[in-house]
Image (cartoon, rainbow, N blue to C red; front, side, top):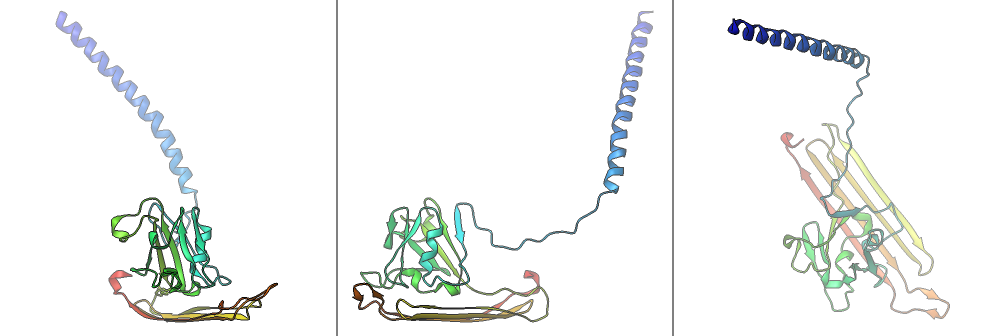
Length: 244
């Protein structure tokens, strides 16, 4: 008698549990069915591909303009905490958070450059003109040991123009040119960059020339302020089909 009563209560719990479960399933299945109908009416957009350079965390990068700035070090004025110590029209000295000169490491295309003389007339960022510079990035905070030997003032990475591969076997031509004049010292600059590429090969050629005389001011002629720089770039790139 006692056994039957316990068994009857257990069965009632099972019945109640089944009824509650069925109600839950019925309540949940209806919104899911309605959601599926709503998804069927949505328009599937085509995939969007965004191309660009991803900088690592802690890096700040800038891209040169089409023209007007010949000294690549002048690009540092756009970065918070960075500046340039003017040392002539083509040989600016990089400065970051109060430190400059040899305290700031400059890496151009994997090679670290230092000034060639005591007065820094051959500044590290003067080797590649702005017209042939693709991007310039600065490591914020303390630079890693692998960045260079002298990195107390930060690490600057300059990347020259290398061109891009084409998306298919069709040959793709691309290029750019910049030209300008400056009346204060009868200066001019001209540059070009051309790239021919397909899916596996690319060939690039670039050149730049800048020349100017001594500049005039209201007190007369400032002697020994003339400048001249010639730069060239030539390169070839290859990638396999697996790298496409």
